[in-house]
Length: 249
Ligand code: BTN
Image (cartoon, rainbow, N blue to C red):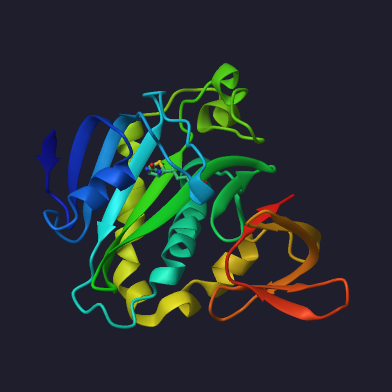
């Protein structure tokens, strides 16, 4: 393990972790706010809804940002993954001219293929949130033969640009962009990013299927509200707010 701290965040670098999110939560009390766990590989990378996140390729990016804001009241924890998804879109566009889209709430797609996933997990004591581990997986140098093993349409920077990338530089750039607007975001919440989020949001105005537990329900996606919730229309033309769920397309 090596620890580096030359910025407002510090980086803990591991050759291997079961999951950077699990590691962050297990050692949560030990880490300061804005500590970033970076692993070259994960043996049990996890995704949303207990899915696996393929993580045995060491040329990819697996990080978890430990966030434990001092004044824990009114922190927009629920929108933190959406904030990171906006930063990812900004990063992909400014660095590589890639126009990415967000599949609500926080998957990053390029031409309909997933390039990045985000998973926030809370650390709580006596029912009080101490903070979160904000996990990010980004397909950087993943080759087509590995991508073909993923159980959904996926892509990587390598596939899009036909070259390899320096993962450490990418991590540094993403973190710089993340922390640049972070204080403003935790002070004012989703409204700070709402317009940008909506402009990147895929499927608005389109038919979508949402999986909630084992149920799959068809809706028309209408808009994203002030809280970051997805507003949809059901078969009876009634508006419904989606708080959590997996958008299938
Ligand atoms: C998803 O799209 O389902 C979320 C995937 C999140 C993957 C990242 S990789 C780094 C961090 N550690 C984990 O075990 N998961 C997240």
